[in-house]
Amino acid sequence: MGGSEKLYRVGQLAELTGLTVRTLHHYDDIGLLSPSRRSGAGYRLYDGVDVERLYEILALRQLGLSLEQIAEAITDQTSLEAMLVAHSEHIDARLAAVQRLRTQLGGVLATVRRADRPTDTDLLDLIRRVMTVDARVENYFDADQLAALAVRREELGEDRIRAVENRWPSLIAEVDAAIAAGMDPAAPEAGALATEWMGLLEQFHGGDPGLRDGMYRMQEDNTEEIQKNFGGPTTEQIDFIRRAGESRG
Image 1 (cartoon, rainbow, N blue to C red):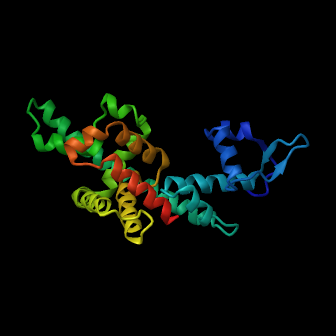
Image 2: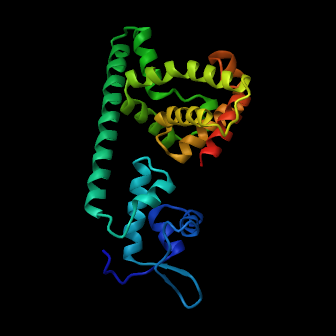
């Protein structure tokens, strides 16, 4: 692939890959993917090596890495074969998760077609797995993101999900106690709380920036309801974690 003489202008590459020109410009601005050549008029020109690197970036994004992590992972010695193998294994895992979800859905559907009423447990479990789309959720996630969240839940498994959900109340209480005690967000103890907080969230969004931002926006827009029904987090607690997280960096 690297020997190809074909060159692509940024608009052509965007159209061929389904990315936006803005995204490719951003990758260039942060040094993640800079075009190998420029035209006489200064236009970006991407060659085959650039296309290969773009694939590696997108494959790593799908594996859940942030742009910062991708920048550290990709080197001139990156093995395309290893990347393809890892990407293939990830897709296989997603397909298996979707198939398990499809099998469960088929079982509930068969019950309904027999004119039987599915049990509450059947429906509740199905709801948990597919994250039923209501008007509010659609404001924060598109169809592909909702499917990704459903698959993410399948990949985590119910035991891990319960462990994360059970940890939230005590973690929120610890953050609340730190705030009440006047703890400095720059303190190592605050940093440890922020690290765990972000880690629990990442269990669900998997490092995908679109899912992460959607979760944050949904929480911000529904803070009072979430606090009332689930005991937090409050705006003050979130601000404390944000400042503690920034202090870590």
